[in-house]
Image 1 (tube, rainbow, N blue to C red):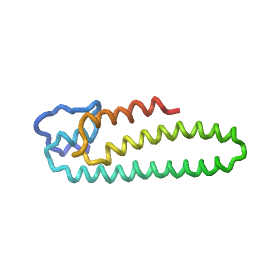
Image 2: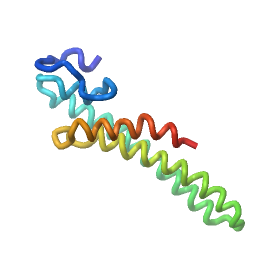
Image 3: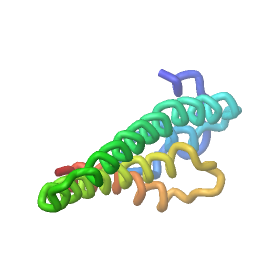
Image 4: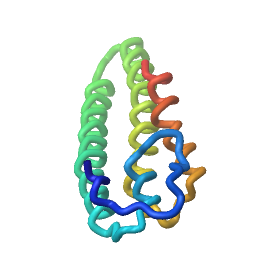
Length: 127
């Protein structure tokens, strides 16, 4: 819906694996200032806020685990939490790098690789 008012000129081939919003913006020949600001704002609200919430939650879990007396329990909790935290860091790290970095400084190939990381590798790693 957001891309409907855009004017597209030249090549109409999306150089990406998926039809993502940022890939469509690269094809537009309209003024993209509004759309880039909108993407940055919504990404900051959703990605950074949720990542901060998850990081704070894991911080509280870490404090609770360190106060446990049983080292067996600590090992199980660290094992479970570390694999989940690795998936969260991979997903949010790659999503933040795509949606919050300046699109002028990134290449199509690096965006494709990063996109595949958070769309394919993250679900495969999810415990």
